[in-house]
Length: 332
Image (cartoon, rainbow, N blue to C red; front, top):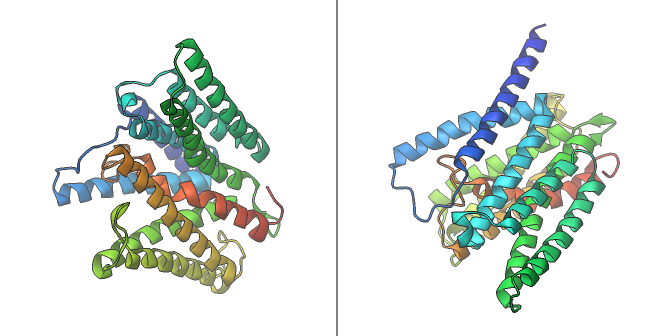
């Protein structure tokens, strides 16, 4: 009875939190910030802590007790991420979205929703999204009787890249939850939690390693604060975490951890942290092109959706296919 009560409370908390997140997005949105927050370090630290104290329990409880909530949360994050992205690469959208911009939001949401059912359906919506974006842009040019300009082609490319960079990678997480089994048991949620832990530990390791030992700039023209030592700390931290998880499973027989070999666990940490660093660099490049500090204000103290999910945008697909063809029982 006690376990049932815990599960019921966790589900209620998950749904309530999702409602709060969606309502906050509708009422406040998430706009890019052009300059650094002038608040004190103490205030910024408190904001970061408060945000973490809300979102970490919410995400974990949703994954463990009510996966539908987490899947819907990813759809919300997809739409919010596309909103931030458009405001960065197309500054005129900061004053309001046009019909094509709204269409891109809808297409991103459809790709997310389609993964509730199958990977094939998500693939269909992705390619359908490409076709719709191209046709819609051409119809808009015809309607306005415009002379074709390179800016129109660039805008079309921006839209397509938004689907590829944001909507498609996040869709892989929903597929993983629904389909992945190891040894005949469903471990999709566990594999997703391991990825989240790898991202959080990798980020923390990169921050503290770079802050205390960073000397060599990794990409000064893209992200001046990133150092080679910080990147090494990110990879080392993620791999070390996965070795610890393997030890918990092997010696303590922790039931929620999937029965993988130490090499497979280390590969998860290596793949996720390496491609995650690439994702971080791409997001930094997009922000630098747009001349902004943070992609948005969705996560107080942490920035926007793109700031928090940049690791997943590039790492999701490689780790998904590693799981699919190396780790789990059957392809999704």
